[in-house]
Image (tube, rainbow, N blue to C red; front, side, top):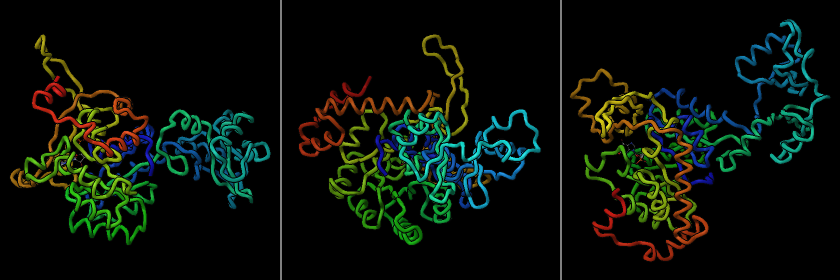
Length: 454
Ligand code: XMP
């Protein structure tokens, strides 16, 4: 899966659900729906994937249909339920018979038949086979139509292209799309319990990539999970993680991961290093893992966690990441899941309280996230304390759409490429790899303060 922009939103239950995944894919990145659901509770995660996949189409391969002999009342009901304004009329053999739109139902009684009001096949602009986007828009402009039904050589319905979808595609030239023009989306699963059944349902719903995401990916549990996954789903696109060492990244590569998530403990909501003293500083982890895979490996590294300034994104990409995964950078944006809560905040100058809207960001190993996943509301307080938490919960002020955040990140990344004297990110990466000393400056404490404290 190729991304035009190297940004992935983290599979955290306060960061990525359908709304965030849609914005990420529209802007050229990818969202990974989190796995913060109770064991066996698969439907809600599948629905998030379906929402993203149904959002935009190139070709709608399963448009809503109706039969010519059905009543207009049935057609009206189908339009209401599905929320679409045009039904494709087909007979029992899937032969295209016509199109019926909301307009055709105006001022007529409910008892008539679809065949009385539809625009029949002879008067439609129809294309045999699946056209390119360019051909489809040319046909629509020339014939002044907004819907283009597609049929096979025998006249059976193959799909539908709408002007609205084509326009959307033109407006979003960087979007991450699948072969049918739908936005791409990923979803995370664990390594035990319902993980294979969950993966099966997600794949059925059209998910583009599965992420086996566990805190310690260089482990027997992961090995078994990868084997189970490959046995059941063959070569379906799979990301595995997290690891942070050369050994770890080789371990996952040898076991068939298509991409690897690197990062143990750098995350914003993460207390793993504080609580366990395990983890690897992220720059070192990226350099080691990239060196272990080799610069031209077909397996991309997703640099996961710890980028709190936009400037850290280019660092992660230069040190070895092919994409970055971000959680707290998107906290507080409109597209994050969760309620907005009003909190009283004291204005520093006047000391007057004002109500400010906040959203919650929490680590996936925080008390709140674990409680929601494990259904343990009734456990005693002492038991909860003994869970071995490795994440925190913080409130972040609400701050507009993630789209603006992504666009600003990209502008800053482009500036960094320019400061680095390169014409593209791959070129900057090459220059950096060939001669890192040219770019790296050892900083004193005073230099660090001058650079980052404002
Ligand atoms: P940022 O820094 O972008 O990092 O917020 C996002 C990444 O942090 C990881 N993550 C956690 N790590 N305990 C951890 O040790 C947690 O509770 C936790 N929650 C998220 C995860 O890799 C995510 O992508």
